[in-house]
Image (tube, rainbow, N blue to C red; front, top):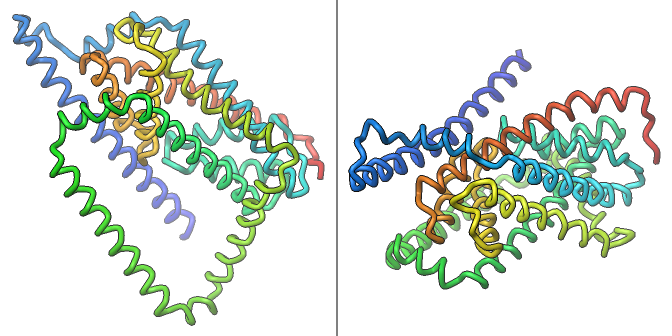
Amino acid sequence: MKKPKKILGTLLKFILFLSIGLVIFYLVYRNQNTAYLAQCAQDGIPAEECSLVEKVLTDFRNANYLWILMVLLAFLVSNVSRAIRWNMLIRPLGYQPRFTNAFLTIILGYFANLGFPRIGEVVRASAMAQYEHIPVQKVMGTVVVDRIVDVLSILLLTSLALFLEFDTILQFINEQVSLEEKVGSLTNLILWAGLLFLVVAALFWSFRQKLVNTAIYKKILHIIQGFWQGIQTIVKLDRPLVFILHSVNIWFMYYFMTYLCFFAFAPTAHLSPVVALVVFIFGAWGIVVPAPGGMGTYHFMTQTALMMYGVSGEDGFSWANITFFSLQLGVNIFVGLVALLLLPLINRNYSPKT
């Protein structure tokens, strides 16, 4: 009975997160459609001749897919660096994983994220552990390090974007939200987060003696120890400078993908590299939200960023859709399926080295 229940639970979670993404996407579409109809009325265009869906489809047809192809190449280059960087983290554990396994399991992780947010890290760690015969908790520890470095990278790039475009971003925020609302929302968020932390800490402290003697606590402790072994690999790197250079390349390529996408769509082709940085950062934070591939949240964030630089809401919505469905879905699904097919084939007679 456990397996059907587990499958049902996974299915329900998938439906939940997909629903969240679709609801956000619908709200973005509804708001933009209302604004688009209002603009059409102002320009004297009849409502029956004014369809946002038709506009988006037309913009898709008119997009320059040569630039989209170049974005795909940048995506692959970024993941070459990610695979090399990941292998650098695994080697201090005493294993010599193949580059192809690291690369394809990373791609497989992206594919999995489209169905269930954040599951990609678990999928790629499990696949790597399976094909390279490494304890999965140790591999997960290296994935944790990989993600910590990514968080630091996005925070640095966010700081750079704020430094370069602080006045533009602040002016836009002030036009949209009053200072009192911002302070009130932030204060409420901090208070609720602090209260939740205190409740969890109090419960743990009250039942700590009973918890440490349970089998599940010992199992969790064993997993944490494996995690810790994986995390410690960051201080055991043979070539830390090479690790840093690959980290820089990963995030430069991510940024470069956004900039290249500007040229695929006429209303954004004139925008500068600095604008691309701001749009990229907004979109990256949109993908962080637990929705499949950032569906809805990515659209909202990138459309908002483009509006700061004079791109109309409907054009911003079209650009977000071209980028999202061509790359987040199209590329990840195609390359993910290739990885899913290749991994069992290339590892059929493979014996990992230590």
